[in-house]
Length: 292
Image 1: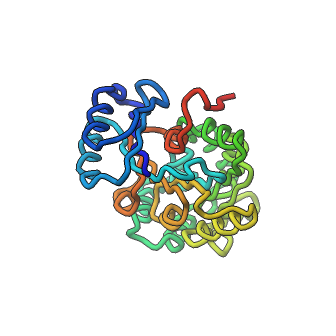
Image 2: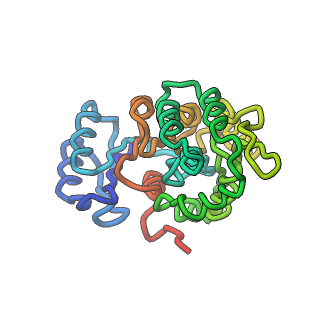
Image 3: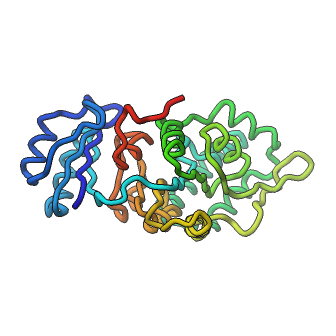
């Protein structure tokens, strides 16, 4: 048994009941359930529809995320989340580069690395090298003035934790940022790379080994084993090529506003909704969200 999930985008006119009903009828689905009227609905089907991706494209044009996922074991016991361009709306290294006067150059490297065109570790070393001699105090300035949170993040973490889940922030970015973001959103644990500092300035180097794609996979496996749960009990979310490993390993891997090359390799895609979509995908209704 599978669940067909329909979630409207934050900037779309809303989820049309007629669209949901006609799709359910066309696919021979079961009862339509509204998780949030005008925003999220779902219905069961016996098999994954053959024209799923054709219909997906039509829904994308309407600002609606259509996903089909297994009905069994939907509510996950662990959240493993990327930070840059996922929980926050920026890439921290790009924001630091703007302050250092090398913003355009670093942003280009970041975009190529996140789309899988460059090897992540080498690209990170190159970008950090361009930040040499930047005062470490600039990090606090960037956090205060440049970083904004993706809507739905607090509700995602709080709701899953209220239902017994463990939340981990694992980033190819920097601990100087994940520490603040993890505390703000209520994560239980965070992992990231460490920028090296000397005499109050960045040295242009990052501590080795670099946390990249393989380290994210390792984090998922290690934490699942420590918490005595299966890898299928994990929901992972990310947007870049270095997230593909954990997205493929998790029971529910969600590509959130992801790079084109990442979307091509992920079955569960959220292009229009925010982080609250991960709760709808797990079958939570809006009145179950924890928002305090």
